[in-house]
Image (cartoon, rainbow, N blue to C red; front, top):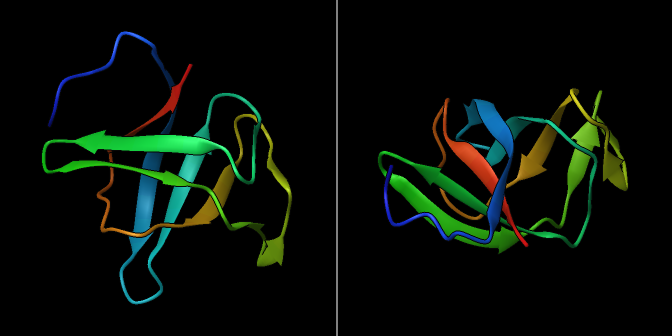
Length: 89
């Protein structure tokens, strides 16, 4: 894992696919998450934070990603399958 895990972070999802040309990560969240929430992406070569500005499911914009469903999230940097997504508490 790149970087040091902050003790006040909660694992909330995992990247299952990445579309490089579109800059979109397909993420399966283990809890509901809304637009504008700040998340951190961590993996062997990934370590950055960003606010979620765009969430899509079945090619439609949604305001909240439902628990245990795969959604598309626009990301500002490259992510990789298996990267973990954390929420700062």
